[in-house]
Length: 154
Image (cartoon, rainbow, N blue to C red; front, top):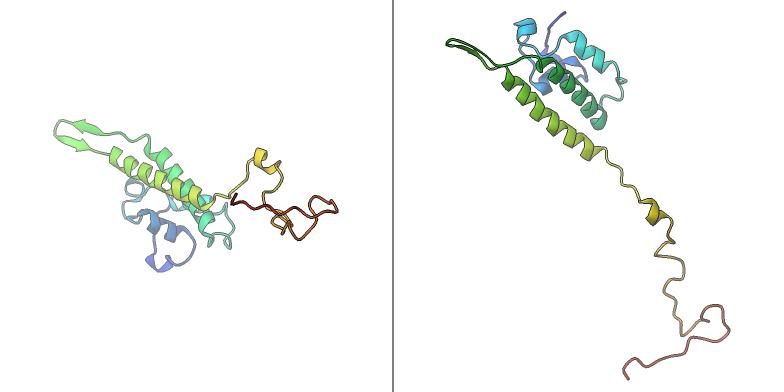
């Protein structure tokens, strides 16, 4: 497993940009400091075509998948206390869980397509051709006589 990060490659839609956006840039400690290895990042990123990665919704979807993988990996790490020595490994999982919820909401709001209910789709349209004709000037309901004029004031 390799752990690398190059800030010079942040503008490319790849592993380094994803590490940067997730804050997983401390690679010196290897598996101790990194959430995922390079191979894990590239395996998930390879599922999306490189030209489609620049699409905001597709990139958010990949980022969400990576955060899910990180959460699954961190779920086995627990807080440990041995005498005065204490490890708070659960805080990393809480951070990524909050990030997951934020990304999920953002992805759902960006990928929603408005739809119409089936019951409303079966009704005739509210607006139609000749909806507001001048009934006094034209025949009413295909009858030969014009609609009679009424004085609404009396």
